[in-house]
Image 1 (tube, rainbow over the protein chains, first blue to last red):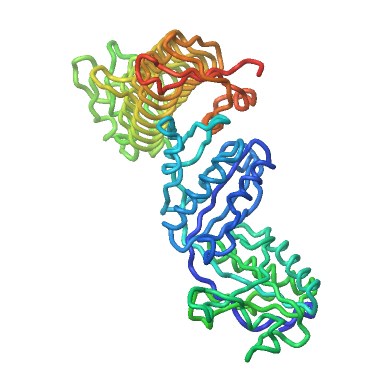
Image 2: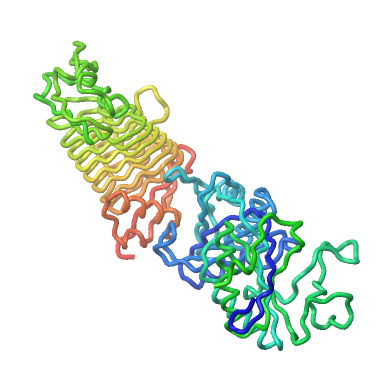
Length: 295
Length: 270
């Protein structure tokens, strides 16, 4: 298949269930909201090494937030609902509670919830106070600046992780340009994040390693420098660089939509090939075929 | 579709009519509604003796001068009940859900012991709004009360949970011995607000002088208050941007109890 001169490989991305939550972080200014969101989503590129995957979904205008202040929405994913809860307690506690003027609210209505504010309240050392408004409990935790406000329970949903597109380029610059363009086009999709730096990973991985301690290692079949060294390579002769965009979503549809936008944008921006990563269909129940995403 | 009950003439003595709630009225036929029992003084009688019944449906509307009709909407759990004018005492007392809208004034004990739902009074409310019944430790335990006029003495007495908002002034001893919950009085508080309170918040944007047993903490912008004031805006109260963004003096008390409660007073001009 060809699109804008790029070869679209007839393959599929293999996505798998992961539990996710949306956190609304507000602050006195957009800059402080962004700062808190960035801090909370630091070191959260891959669940393998970071215990969760998280990123800022988008910035929020004051009329979109519960307290009428500017904010950001953050999506965080882990392997199970319990894991989401633990990571939220850690990250909201260490990064949002500590951030000047920030407050933190649940951003997803879901049957399943995890306790976040109810754990963080103990930081108040007995001086914390709760408020119940519209059947939702909030905790007021006194801090040196004034007060930190955090919702008690956050919704968690079974989402979809591991959506991806892989962009190949005839040189490193064109491959990166294609990936950047794709990531930009994908950011407008609500309900999904791209957890790697700038949304782009240069180091896609395969499952396992020759070293027993490592659960994942470099994706050697897509490393251009190993073309002459490995028994099998997926790097075509005219390709010198490869980037991957990984997508996690609160549902399958945002992941598909983001992949479709990214695929079209990457092809138009000069990618020589666009492909996707999978594990032979053995890992995840969601198979997103690139041919179905063609415009 | 609306079921309308129109009071033919004012009762000689108060009419106890807790059957006038959507749980009993919604979907009932005219005959069924007219046969519902009410107490007129010490005389057991029927709704049909006092009210003309027309229409049918889930929305219930009461018309006429109901100042001597007690317990309207008391204990209701769902649905919507509208009182076109004034209503007597104990309106919405013990209600657990649904919406009760009173276009005029409400008598004493409106929303007393309330557990859930929303009570809106477009006029003023009497004493013991959302209050505590004698012999009980806690009063209102959930839900929201919005009064567009003033409230009488002891609004929110014994309040355990929920929100009471008064656009005008709250009378003497608002939040008396309250256990938790929130009272907002946009135009000021009477004397002895929060006397004996253990926890909870009393907020005012008008003049107020805390009791000597309250201790000043600081002036700040309480983050939680923005949620409440935005909620009150959504419920139709005129909350200004100055009130939403304003700085509030925090007084902690009552020192004779736990001192875990607070009175927040808007600092004018800050």
